[in-house]
Length: 262
Image 1 (cartoon, one colour):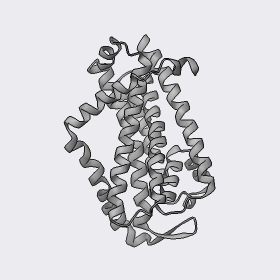
Image 2 (image 1 turned 180 degrees about the horizontal axis):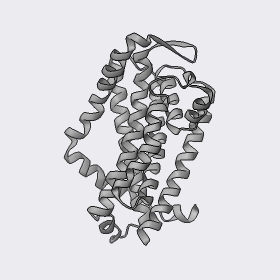
Image 3 (image 1 turned 90 degrees about the horizontal axis):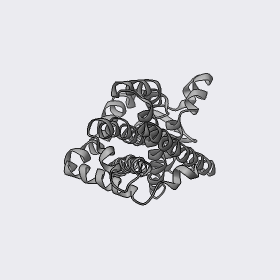
Image 4 (image 1 turned 90 degrees about the vertical axis):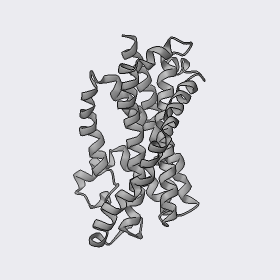
């Protein structure tokens, strides 16, 4: 681990800056999805199912269904924006655009390039979560100041899912194979990660599986923050998620180095 991180320098920030500059060239279309995404989820699930579901309970607090799924929309964005940035987007930069080859012809190392990509994937999660948090706060779905804890959760969760995506990028032989981690990992987390319903409603065996999914813990932390229901155990969950994110980041750098050096 020390050998891997020892090759990461401040120059990783240049890779991050390069991606920021590209992102800002089409800023209008890039900022639009996180602005509209909460409305789509709330209209589809909140208005569509809200009347039938009624009130749910979260840590003893009765919660209208709209308020329950609002944090879920942010959790989904944290996963999607980081994962897809370091899978499809990074793969295109690496394989089709040869951007990685061009950057490593400069004083930057391979580890700098991958660290910059992870930093950028984390940033996209943070930007999306922040915009959605602001939008949802106007509709009264966010309790302050506890709701501000969504920001560090987005950073930690974003790093984890960005690293998860980069690990997938290091292993797939072609871009079409990304369908496998999406079908086997991302989609199950999307539907069973505690975003649309309480996992306590699941059978015990399914509840154990859901508990093992990283998005379940991100969803719980985001929901507890937005509903002002944080407990001391959430600190331990957040710390565990941070350790997992760092471990995944180190693994992704090592695996990508192995792929790029071949």
